[in-house]
Length: 453
Image 1 (cartoon, rainbow, N blue to C red):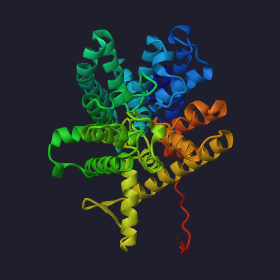
Image 2: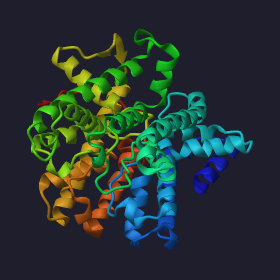
Image 3: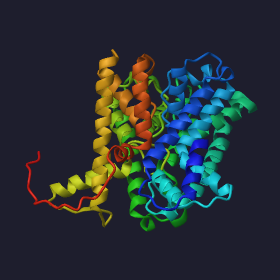
Image 4: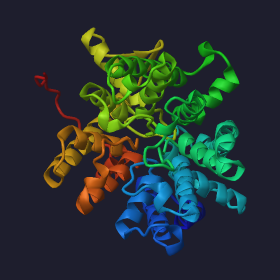
C-alpha cells in the first residue's frame, strides 16, 4: 500500500510527459508489494493458530489480494483473529484496486493528482477518460462501503441468533467483505456447505457477489436512470448477459445434478434444490463460494463451470475472467461475420474495431495462459486432467472453486497457480502491454488474403 501511494505521489509531482510511463507495470508492482507485505504479516507468530510455511503464507496473501479464494490451509483454523483481519484487509484492497486507495490517500493529504498519476489510475480502472477515473476513485470506495454495510446487517440477522453477538457479527463482517469482493474466502473448510438449505444466507451472499460482479458503474447507472431503456449500451450488455448466464447456469446445474446423490440428490425439498442450483449456478463466474462439494459434481457440470469461470463478470468490478463485455463482443462479431455483416452491432450501436481487437487479444492471451498453466501442472502434478484444468481456470478467473487439487500442487505447482492468479487479476492484456509496448507503425503494406478455417 505504501509503495503504491509513493508511486502515485511521485507521479502526481511529475507532469512533464507520459512517454516513459508504464502504468501496467506500476499496477503489477503495487499488487506484488501488497502480496509481499501481506505474506510477511501472515507469517508472524501471532497471525496463526497453527504454524504455516512461508510458501503457504504467500499463497494465502496472493489469493487474498487477487480475490481468488484458493487456499492450501484452512483460513478459520490456521489463522488467528489478527491473521484473518489481515486477509480481510488484503481482500478489500485487492478487490477495489490499490489505485483506489492510493488516490484517496493522496486527495486526503491534499496532493493534486498530476497527469501521470491520472493515467495510472485510468489504466487501473480501465476508464475511458482521466476525469472519470479520478471521480471513480471516490465513488467506488463509497459504493463498496454501503454495499458491505448492508450485507453486514442482513447477514447478522442470520449469524447472530446462531453464534451470538460477537461471533455472529464477525461472521457477518467477514462474509460481507469476502462476498462483495468476490474473494470466496470462508471461515470453514467446506465454505458455506453448512448453509446449503439456508435460503437467507444463500440469497444474501449471492446478492453481494452479484452486485460486486456488476461493478459500481452499472449499479450507479441503474440507480440514477431507473429505466432499462435509458441505460447505456454497456450497462444493458452487462445486465442482460449476467441475467442470462445466471439463469442458464442455474437451469443446467439443476438438470445435471438433480439426481446426483452427492449434490442436489441429497436434498429432499424442491425449494432447497432451487436455492442450491441458483447459488452454485451464479458463484462460478465471480465468487468461488460453494454449498456442495465441488469434487462430487458431474463431469458435465464441471465443464460448464470451466466456461463460466473463464468468462467472469463485468469490467470495473471485483471479479476477473475475460469479462462479460469481451465475451459478448466476440459472440456478436462471430454472428455478424456468419451473417455477412462486417460491422459489429449491439443494441442498435456499432462497436469499434479497436474494441473487437482488444476483446480478441484478451481472450487469446487468456487462453494461452490457461493452456500453459494446464500443461505445466499436468507435468508436475499427478492428478486427474479435469481437476487440473478446473484449478487453472479457477485461478485465472480468480474464482476460487477447486475439485480438491490445491492441496496436492506441491511447491512448484503452488508457485504456478500464484502467478496465474496474479495475471488473471491484473488482466492478460495488461501483461501483454508490458511484454510488447504498443507503438503505431507508419508503414502500410499491400493487402493480401489468407485462408481461415
